[in-house]
Length: 113
Length: 113
Image (tube, rainbow over all chains, first blue to last red; front, side):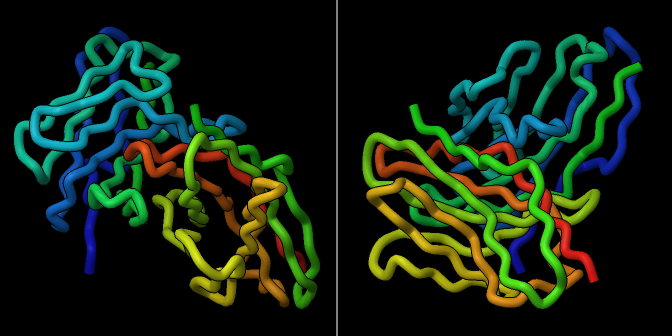
């Protein structure tokens, strides 16, 4: 069974902290995504990676960075957490074939206080 | 740039009645369209997709979706709603030019007994 695993379900961090959200997939997928989900705004793409060490900015990259050193792992980094980054973060992966669906992790609910 | 619109924030339907959740899209090339469902505090689960061919696509849990190229729509349907179908539904699109997966704002489906 396919699996995308996010390291934490719930996180509480303080303003100004550096925060790491980790995502691992076991399907040998080329593509990995980080989305942010907020009520009324749907899913907004933060960053996308199509290969190791390769990345593209999504719709809302400001305040975030990413790292993909290995194919199976894609990390989202909040350089200096702020309260407006309190949200649900979803990781996903897919094959490079654009006709294929993406698979999602269970989500990390981050609260910045 | 590609985009997806889900014009209804919420759809209410009685159990046993047919349901429709609307989605319209905009892409520059051929569209690849997806529906996902999200249950509370969970990640997204894939329901169905349109790639090519028959305009009526069947998916999981008795859901189907109708692709209409002239209206650029991909509405999700089910002949007989269940209370357990109550969830948040997302429509998404990719085009054949890239790997970005763009989501709509989501529609909350409420099925009442």
